[in-house]
Image 1 (cartoon, helix red, strand yellow):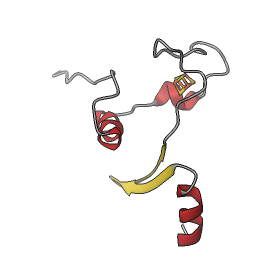
Image 2 (image 1 turned 120 degrees about the horizontal axis):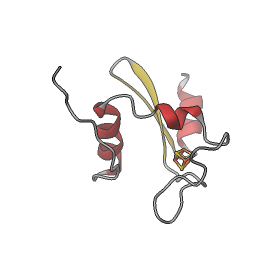
Image 3 (image 1 turned 120 degrees about the vertical axis):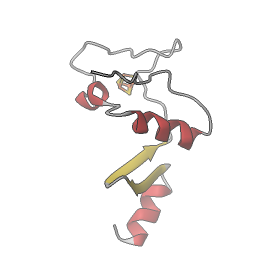
Image 4 (image 1 turned 180 degrees about the vertical axis):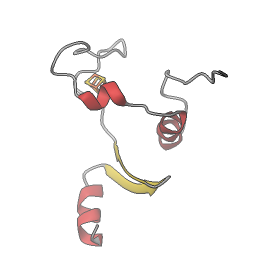
Length: 83
Ligand code: SF4
């Protein structure tokens, strides 16, 4: 991405970076559907984006969010299963 466009996007609170072969956008804002109890207010409804259903893919996704926030913010985790 051209430097000026990257700068423009990042001025709006979105951090762009590449890691592990993928392009990432960190959006420093809470979803308007996040309830005060920390739950999804549109869970199970068509309004919930498919992206929410898919994320996180791997433990690294969660680690990145926690690293970016500077503390453990995501309560989700993956459990290693030996088969
Ligand atoms: S799961 Fe998606 S729609 Fe629901 S609160 Fe989180 S970001 Fe918002």
